[in-house]
Length: 114
Image 1 (tube, rainbow, N blue to C red):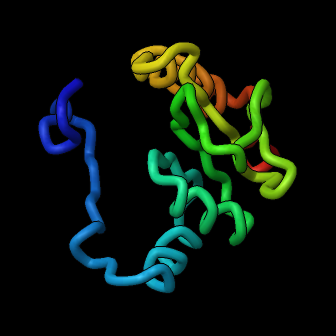
Image 2 (image 1 turned 90 degrees about the horizontal axis):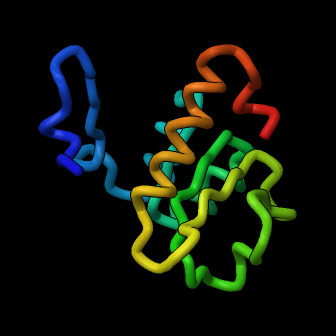
Image 3 (image 1 turned 180 degrees about the horizontal axis):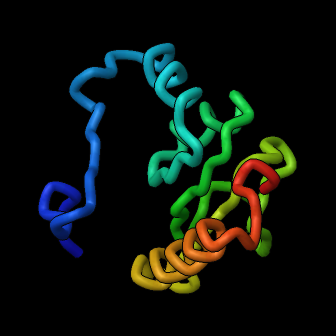
């Protein structure tokens, strides 16, 4: 995989990491996003607590808080979990998330309902 800074032409990526100094600033940014994709569980917890749609890239040997054998969270109705099927299998997680995102964009669902 290539870093976000090396994305294909025509794909506009905005980075805000240098501008965010605490969770209140991160929360303010989240309130202006349609969907948060996160590899960081602190960000996922914050987005879930704010009721923002959030999709979490999660590892195979997940922390107990994310439970097992499910793609949602009883604590955060707007959170969807994409978990590795095997240790180190990030490609599978990314492929599953891309397919879900394509379905969302095509109008087969509303990320806010997840």
